Structure formats: structure tokens, C-alpha cells
Length: 358
Ligand SMILES: [Zn+2]
Image (cartoon, rainbow, N blue to C red):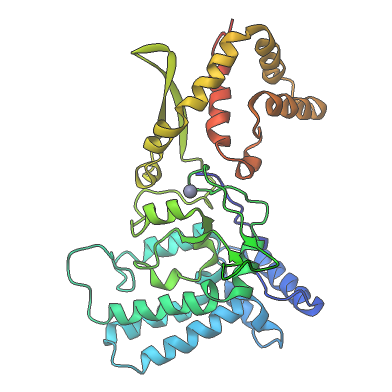
């Protein structure tokens, strides 16, 4: 899992480039920033902007309006009363749900442990009556407001335009494609998946929550599917690293190494990461090892430069340069989303730090 920016500027997007809309967006962002300096956060002040004539161009107000409309329909439907009561909790916390910082949404979920609006999709026990109706409403909201809405979908991916690689596996590229011309009947718009960290089957009311949405590769999205990630998983939006790669000598061949993944969270298990890396990327690791062992002088010099403890600004950029020429990848954690296997490569470098390559 690679860390992804969850700062206030990354939680609102717009389908317009109009200067008035962008000004409104900036004001709303500033308000969120101010609100998050207080304790407790009070996002309800966002109400002050929702009647602006450009509000519908901002994801937060557009989604809020659509959700509120559907909740009012649900409240006058035949859905059981217990749902109607709980839907009021969503209305009350709608801004937290839509643009709240990741950790605040997690706190909210934990405080709602027995919330009827959260239900394990794959649980064999019967769902509460009415859950399927409510779940379908939010599933449709996600489709109409975002996944089938070309303009907003594109704006969503623009927020991640420097993210080239899936934040879950750090293996597959996820760049969208917008071809200017069609070739026959092809699809000229292709985008990565939009992954719900807390699955929308189980947490329907988070289906449009920005801190629950991440671009991901289709593989991770499919593998992760309906697992309850509240228990022991780490979101890429969390300020934590969830695993480290270790390299062990293969007992059957001392020139070969095996990849082990050390972690305390369930992410690796859910995404089958250790298996995937072991099956596919051990050759990559062994090639670097062989290279180091075959040219120890060159690599010792490179490593020495990399390992210098003095991190003045000039040395730092030199270090990054050396690292790139040596490992063909990015040194800084903030750049890990730019290239596949950057986490694996950095952990290999840290492993070399403790080895005498001579
Ligand atoms: Zn992936």
C-alpha cells in the first residue's frame, strides 16, 4: 500500500474550469482547512455555500443534493422505521461523510458499531428487511453521480493526475486514456477502477465519500471486493505504512532470494500481495542481487554515496540521482506512486544498507 494525499485540497473536485466555480472551490477548501484546525470538526458550516449558483459544479454539493433527495424518498417509502431513524444520522453527518478527513470517517464508523446501515454483504445471516432497497439507492447514486457521469469521473481522476501506479499493489499502471478519435467502435475513454476502501455493499452511505474513494487497478479492486476493511486494514489515505519487504536466501540456492512481506495489517492477505510478489517479482530482486555481486566496486561506490548520512540539500538530490541510476526507481516515499515496485525496491535498498556487498 502506497500513501495517498488526503489533505483538504484533495477532497473536492469540479466539472468546470470557470473562474467563478474555481473561486468558490477555493473558498470551500479554505473553510474545510479552517474547520479542521478546531476540535471537534464542524463541517456543517459548509451550508453557507450550498445555495451559491455555482454549487452544483462542486462534487460535495452536487452529491449532497442527490443523496438528500433520495433519503427523503426513502423516508416516505415503506422501508422499516429503524432505517428511517438511521437515515437521519446520515443527514446529520452528511458533510463529514462526503468530505471528512479519512481518520474522522473511521472514528465515525467505529462509533457506529451496531449501525443498521452497515451490514456485512457476504454474511450468510439474513440481511435486515429493507437493507437491499437502501443499498440499491446508494449504488445508483454512485453510478449516476460519479461512475457513469463522464465529466465528474474525469474530474475525479484529474485529482490524482500524478499517480501512475495502483496505491494498493504498487504494481500496475492506472493512467486513464482519453483518445481524441475513435477507431471503429472502440471505447475512447478508459479509466482505472474507482475503489471503495470500505466496500459500498457493506457501507452504502460511503459510496460517494471522497476519503473512501481511490483509483486502483482492476485486479486489486476485484480481489479486495467485499471484505470488511474496518477491522484490521490500512487505507492508503492513512498516515501509516502497512508493510515491509524482507529478502531471505533461498535454502535450495544461495544465489536466489525469496520475498517475504512483514505486516501487522490484513491488507497483504486481502490483496494476496506476498503471493503476487513472490510469484512474479523474485526474478527482479535476484537480477539486482546478481548485478551487485558481479560488479561490487561500482555498486559499493554507488551505495556509499547513497548511504552517506549527511543529508544537506545538495547531497539529498545527489542521493536521489544515484538511487535512480542504480535502482531505476524513486527514492522518496512521496514519489512511490509514480513507478511500479518502488516500495519493493526501496526496501531492497534498505536491506543492502545492512549488507557488505564486497
Ligand atoms: Zn493494484
